[in-house]
Image (tube, rainbow, N blue to C red; front, side, top):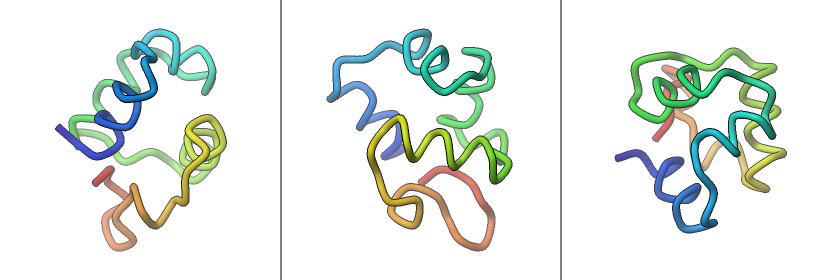
Length: 67
């Protein structure tokens, strides 16, 4: 499980709720959280804003995958 998924769970938010807040499909959030998809810069910016996090802490700089 990625740090991003752990944070979402600790915040008490479902994937469906967070996906709606970010403006992406729940399946997209799922594959981002499972390191199967590299979120584009716009998606990462919305994720960072929704979670209230620093991008560098939760996304790998080289690959763009969730940590």
